[in-house]
Length: 341
Image (tube, rainbow, N blue to C red; front, side, top):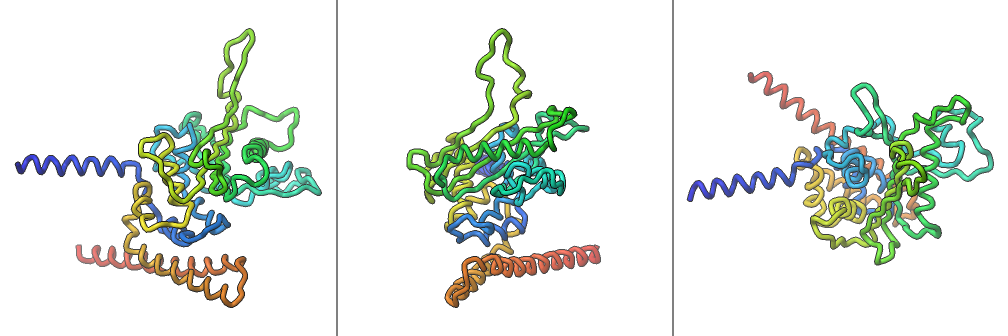
């Protein structure tokens, strides 16, 4: 009987470890961003900031990038080239090259509307990289509040992909090496105004060789340069079933991109492990409440919604103060342990 009970506990622990196998260690910065954006109804710059976290990006990339199939979230997080992350790159022809190559006036097209990518970055392509050679994927992440802005999101996504691809090269010349072009991904996360029959769906669009006359199919690596993924949410409640294709990504985005519910941290812990920061979670929550109070008071006094950024900066400063205090406490504890040895 004792052996049976011990064996049962062992099996339960193994199952628990298996469930948490793909957890990522969560940082305080990510925890802070999640709290700051907890009650945001829209998808403004502050709300989107949580999507800039490598932990969050790893979950999204795992569910959208075919090259990362079979890789853990921790491995994918390490693939992301942090120094490449930018949210101000321009999309308009000519201007993107200015951002990438430098301030060369030749690349600037005058009298043209300027558009910006939301978040662009590079991440390692493990299928093509080696110990000595790094080949990257160029990713454009586009969170969208409105799936029906008056034109097909798919067309805009393809335009952005084309600009992302062309931005890898300067002006085309006789010496241009097109073989250096690396694959681009456009990932669009659409939250609201999704038709009912399309809610909680994922579509993948990529280049394909559809016909050959006289020869066999050409090697896919020669033309596999653009993939667009459209992820559609649509409503605050997600009723998918565990085990369904796409379930993990859709559940994660549902929890993250709508105002957070009471079970937010319980669900989030299945993806990102914040156990090292649990004691600070209450501190951050209290600060979030303070920030909300400041915001409400400011609005009562006629302060414009556009001043929200200043409010959030104040909250972030307070969060960093708590974090620095925790670091100092941890260092003092380590010093005390060292003296006692």
